[in-house]
Amino acid sequence: MSENQNIDHSTDESIVRSNFIHNIIDEDIENNVYDRKVHTRFPPEPNGYLHIGHAKSICLNFGTAKKYRGLCNLRFDDTNPIKEEVEFIESIKKDVKWLGFDWEERMYYASDYFEKLYECAIILIEKGKAYVCDLSAEQMREYRGTLTSNGKPSPYRDRSVQENLDLFKRMRAGEFEDGARVLRANIDMESPNLNMRDPVLYRISHATHHRTKDDWCIYPMYDYAHPISDALEDITHSICTLEFEAHRPLYDWVLSELDFKQPPKQIEFARLELTNTVMSKRKLRKLVEEGYVNGWDDPRMPTMSALRRRGYTPEAIRDFCDKIGVAKAISQVDIALLEHCIRDNLKLKEARMMAVLRPLKVVITNYPADKVEYFKVENNQESPEMGTREVPFCREIYIEQEDFMENPPKKYFRLYPGNEVRLKNAYFVKCEEIIKNDAGEIVEIRCTYDPETRSGSGFTGRKVKGTLHWVSAQHAVKAQVRLYDNLFLEQEQAAVSESVELDGMMLNKNSLEVIESYIEPSVKEAKSGQRYQFIRNGYFCVDAVDSTPEKMVFNRIVSLKSSFKIKN
Image (tube, rainbow, N blue to C red; front, side):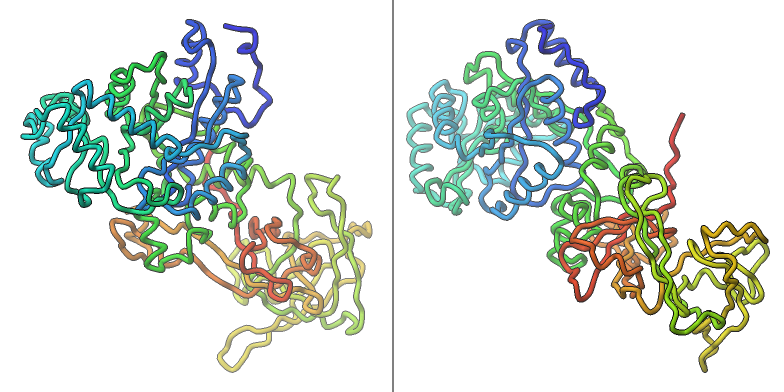
């Protein structure tokens, strides 16, 4: 192994831990394959937004290149103009950058190689390794055979080289309608691998391409364009998900027939399977187009843009991708691990603040009506370097509805008639009276306070078991708070929850709750996307789309309680 390969990356969080793919690369380096270079690529199709599953691939490809001091390209597989949009390209670039990776000047498109791909197809035709076929799509499926029966050759398989060259050039010239003809590889119709039974290499599509416009009316298939693009970019290790394992013989066949020297090596890994999450682009598109969610960046979606808007950090996602590792076998990861990673990432670096999500008014009857006090409070007790802020206190405050019960059970230590609790960073208060409306609902609690019990005053008298957070009714900022639950339910959850079935997905009808809440006034200084821990309520983020200075909107990133168990 060369000197620049002996690198200690143990302190670099952007580099994935060793895995079976790295073992293969280590062996290639040891054997001086590819001149000991490592060059990977991330090749998204620009037909949708990236999701958390793509984050695993991004981290693996860019992280692997960084580990070996190699290179990683960003290449858009734009071979299907019907489904591709510039909007998706821009969102993908933003997501990769946001995750913390840089392709530098190495951003490419499969369309960069359309002329070269066409020339390669001519070479295959001239070698008798490709032919123009007139079978319809339905007929091709019939001729293809099944897993238990061989396919049969197309009646057009024995066309002469000259006839195939003529027809293929006329396909490019636009003489034929969509679907009239295709270019197929001439391999083996009796192969046990269905992908090797004369797969389609080119199809006709009179569609305007986002980059090449109307220059082309024939477009290469992914299985043909991808290996050639890899080879043209000097990719050494083409890392892809496990569903492409059966396509690897075709990948190798294309490169071998075109006589590429030191062709790239395709390696497959298991894609991310996450509980309570759907990552099919088709199904996610259906949710957006049919209005079940409010766009691709709806914070309930698993897309990168949605996670970013909800308040997830790139560090937490990279940590998650590192923790789940890279394996060959398919397994499902508990979404609680992703939530654990975001909690772990935010707990030391985000300010804590008091917010009352479901307010209940409390009047402190023996506190002067015109008096306002300010209490100095640490922004984060676990990170003293984050400093302090001042929180106002007055006669009328709000507490959480759940922090009061008229007839409490045993071991209920919050506020109830005759009980005394501490208001966090303030005084002891005691419930003296309950005010109800005509419907019998509790609308106000009246308490008295003990001025000797001010927090930080050195009071050493009686003890109380309950401490409640609160906000000043006079000074608090009214805000809209959005509480999110899983958009998708597992089957056992759907059986006991309100759900609706859509195309095989069980959608949680209670995945979003919007409430009007009160937050301490220092939140007025919050910027778009800023995160906080609302004490006892979870981590929240200023919504980057809907929040304004006049009406603040907060998304709950994650609750404080975790169901994830760390194994020793």
